[in-house]
Image (tube, rainbow, N blue to C red; front, side, top):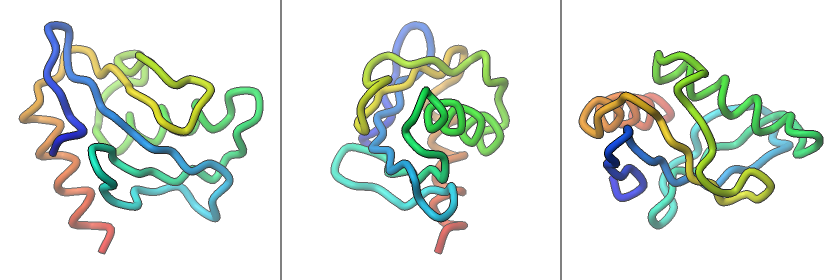
Length: 101
């Protein structure tokens, strides 16, 4: 999973986000990014808040451990998931990708 990279302070997760979708969920992989659709519109940070909540719930981690590295105002983003290992996040995302089909 090229969209997950190890860092000293956790892992980074590269995303392409599609706001304003019919429902929130993982779409799949696109190049070196995980694609997630978000039902919230990209207005006043609503889509970003929903993205953080969605990932925290699906990865079973506190929202406070997820922060933006880049892309807070764009569709291509990189998130920091503090205190997590690459192996742990890969396992959880692989399970989510299998479940979407």
